[in-house]
Image (cartoon, rainbow, N blue to C red; front, side, top):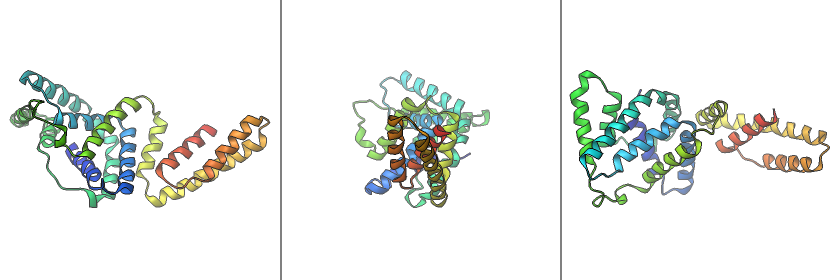
Length: 247
């Protein structure tokens, strides 16, 4: 498995390099948010890599304690990343022109501790922990202006999704979301049209069978809304979710 810094740097550069193009940025942000929504582990890795890069502590004891706790947590959960790496690989591949081959020394040292933990690498891990501990500086000397806006945004996204979606998605919903994120544009269009057609047909049947005026009005309104939707990942997930409710 590729080190997480590869994915973190790539996602950061995608957001940063599309930031000035509002339409492209919104689309890229939506895809990244979808991946965050799908995987709790991804949200946690994003959050902790950002925190280790930006947090400030005044005492060495606090610095060492935070590094040990956070990297131990990442090591315990690194295998869970395998569920989301296919999605990330596709996001990065589809946006290769926005990705930069950059090296972030902080992320590189976190990777070393988390992904290369063994007796043979003990000396190197000690050096990485020392480097990260020394990176934490007095909070009065470090300002948020050191970090680009899109990177701040990726941090906020990961934290917000950790709070909002940790227990909301069912396994079935996760599968739908994952499959949607992996779809090509052609496949998405085809699948959306198929699902849309089935949903409209079911709604038509329900309207004809309904003897409740209030329910009929709601069904007609829903049918009209669905019929006007264009193909996007968000609308596909919405219509697919409605189909699950109707079945």
